[in-house]
Image 1 (cartoon, one colour):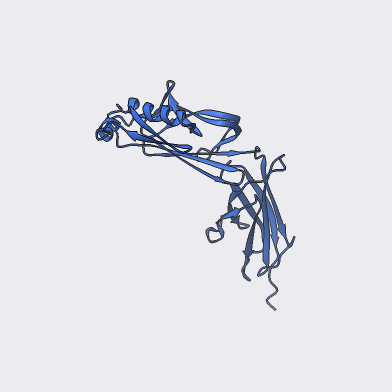
Image 2: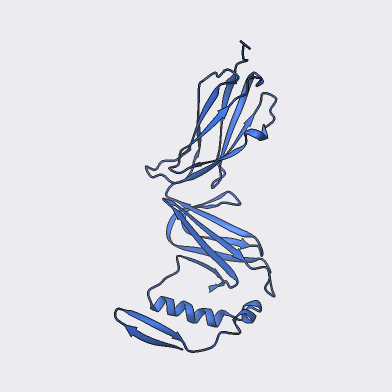
Length: 238
């Protein structure tokens, strides 16, 4: 049990028992009782978990959870320890306090407007979830000038399509393919849009192959993809 010392408006809790065997208990999956003590103590203090990972109604042990928030984007990362005695894949339920549009980032799947989902946690593999105030319906790509001459600078504007007046940061994976259909790896880039929209500046070469080029952009969170065509005109050489 804890010894509680009241000090002003706060409380200090003295851990009145040893926990030197915790790492061994964690390795063999015997740490649930100790974790329940700390969980109940935090609840008594009014500190509630923002995310819970459970299996069979009980908290899943040996699972690290980290959260990151930037604007309207909420990311949750979880890692199932692979060094425990039984590192088997666990089908768990992940639950948040409130509902949002939920995406499994690594699988690029949409779970709907919800506060929970089921997830198979592979030992040693990171699971990443994103929560947004809107569902991403596609990627809008706008380019200018409309028919650049080889050697021109092309401005590429990127934005997610959605029905909300709210904005959140997005990362777009941009690829540019030539008239032969092959992607030019040296133009591939990840572009950050802090307010949801992003700009990619493409400096074309003077000897760029004339014809129809394809710009594709994939939203990293949702996997939604958009394309736009650009007609490159041959440089006159003057």
